Image (cartoon, rainbow, N blue to C red):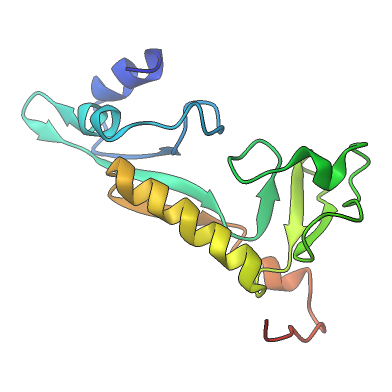
Length: 143
């Protein structure tokens, strides 16, 4: 087991819990299938565990992030950043707007979902589903 939160969640009286798929947001902190199974079980009551996923912003502490995308951390993607990466959200340090319609970003989301499924979560809570509001008036390309 990875950390104290596993015990706390196992002992929770709630039957629906939304949490990150990772104890610290990183790849090394990812909950295993055994961790998720343990957190879901508590006495005679099974819980539903829902994993958080941001589909409208990239987060610089996730498994997919490459520090060279914004090496100087000025919030503006560097020249070698993927074309789907946009500026940092000024209200959430380390979160970058994304061109959610881009197939490169979508591939990352699919990989992220595979990790959540493999860990045994019961579903997902999608955040930043309103990302289109940031890009209103922009016509997405089809790549």
